[in-house]
Length: 254
Image (cartoon, rainbow, N blue to C red; front, side, top):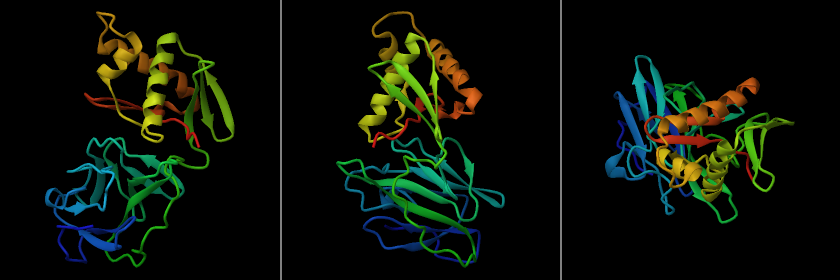
């Protein structure tokens, strides 16, 4: 794991970088933007070894300075960027301010049995005496003990919201079932997701080769599904990526 960031300490903030097959090291954050990706020649912090190429070659994510704050932004990666804050783990869907002790996580290994290991970048304000390696986590697919996720039973065409120990069936129209079924299959294909599903891909899954369907229809379908989830505060289980597509947070299958 290599870094092109300034080695100076005592300014700004720093991250403790660790992961499978790497030596833990402290990297000072400097300048206005620090990029993180697989290749050292294209990033300020390179994450490796990455034999499965799960990390984007350039700018998988970036740390950005905003005045006295540091924020993290995913670079549109396929496998995503996550933040662990206390006991809660969430995917980075937009620019997010970092707090002292936050751990930014990037998928490093995915075994044949679905076990996941992560690169971890533990964020600390400069001079914090607790800047040590973050405690490893077993699986980021479980966002927290009481986290919400969606479960889909294709044989019965049942969509269920799982919220802690509670389960709520969500009744949606036929087109929404086709949407959810496809997104669940895409998540399963990458070990649990949430996978980015492009607009055109989703439209084909819903309407096939039928002509005259638009992205506005797709957006309305997603909006309707979010409205169904909002009474339980679960509308964010469907994420939008501007001009790209949507992601769906589904429950682990293990």
